[in-house]
Image (cartoon, rainbow, N blue to C red):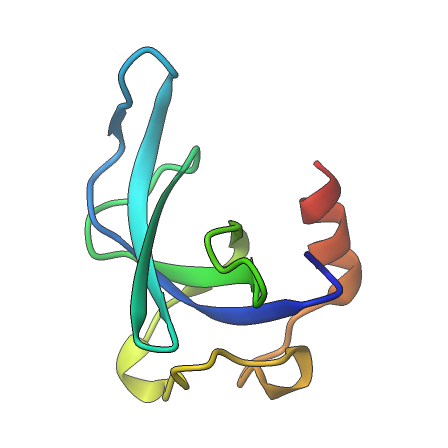
Length: 104
């Protein structure tokens, strides 16, 4: 994922809930090239919360929530439809922390 990574904003579409027999989680969506993608994270969010997502630009269904970067004021962000490259993300992110997150 690091080789073809892009970043965007994900939005929780549900509150923290039971996900059938697989435990608990929060459903979220994000957009890439005008297509909507959905997934579930094991982090606890409330419906409407926003957070940074890293995804594979060649396989955009592969995404991970970067919970260490919550989004406080989404109105101030202009999210490009093709996502951000690492150096384009409009706030400071740390590659070491991201690599650590991806290997967990």
